[in-house]
Length: 481
Image (tube, rainbow, N blue to C red; front, top):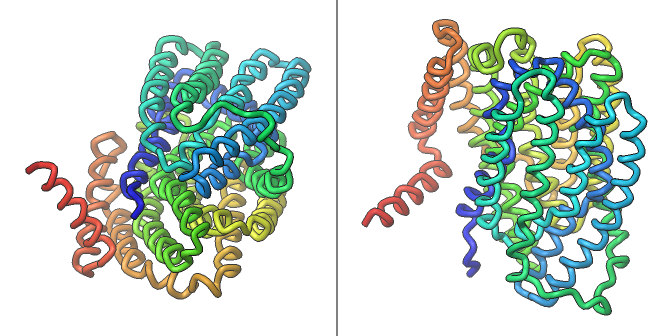
């Protein structure tokens, strides 16, 4: 029996992922008013440009490292070798990218704004969170994030007071991410030994790393290129500002669904390495059902409450975010499903080539649609393109694994959630106009939606919900005694 609990690790990783996004979420109402849509859009555009250099510095090593460590997590010597070999590749790639980025930044009009984000590249060198994820030690990550995210929040409220403080906002976002990653090294001696250079052969991984890097490039196209294309085509920082804010909220909600994926990758990798295919399938069907359980109410709920939420959260001038959220909320289900099939199944079972093909097709579709739709619909066009790309990838990946994981069973497992979510959505859409935009009214709508959804599932006696709820209640009662 494995001692590491998936449920506990899910909660750890959920907290970790939320904390990764919580700084912009907490500070967004403040920054949207202080920096304005123009300042937010400027940061969004420059950060998207820097992301390309970060992409080449990372080389897909996060996914590679996590997967490889999961295979040898019970063997200290082997995981030591994997750890240092991965870091050597990352160090070389990062140093080359830092040099290129500095040269590029010095030739830009706002050189200081570009240069301050060099900390994003230094963060790549320092980041070894993938090792702890591969070891299924998600609890090790949470405390550091709490400390440094809180420090970042304090820094923003103290140092960013006017539009001209955009530089300090960008510095805070990049610098605190760097020192957070650097802090992981304090506990690494507990898990790996000092490197013995004669035992290290990082070049042997290059082929595999490149095969994982190709889909990473493709993923970047529809996660970052949309912002770059909005800026280049519209020449309007405001449009990037609207898109950035809407994407920020949809990603925060998406975290609830995708956090399970990071936990499941090392677990599935572990069972795959032992040849236990039936257990892998069991975990996969549970993961799909979890996506339906959480993804459907989150998607429909975000659409229903966005008109009440946006005005008080972002302030005046962000009306377009409502329609953007209506479209981008669809990413929750699309990414949730392809995260299960692609990241949780194809990657751990060493079929990254198939994963790469689907992602490249989705990326090409996204690029073409961006090129056409942004010209006519601006940021809304980019949102539609992203949803179409992610949905395309989800459908293709399910088709690829159809002989191992039944598409019919995957879809059928969500029937209770389709019904409960539909009932919740209809009721919320009919009562939302009774509520005026405010924190309390948005909270009221969320609670009403959650109660309707939960009651509907209980009345349908949804086994997945009831079993997990019962286990949670038992654990709480056990601790209370």
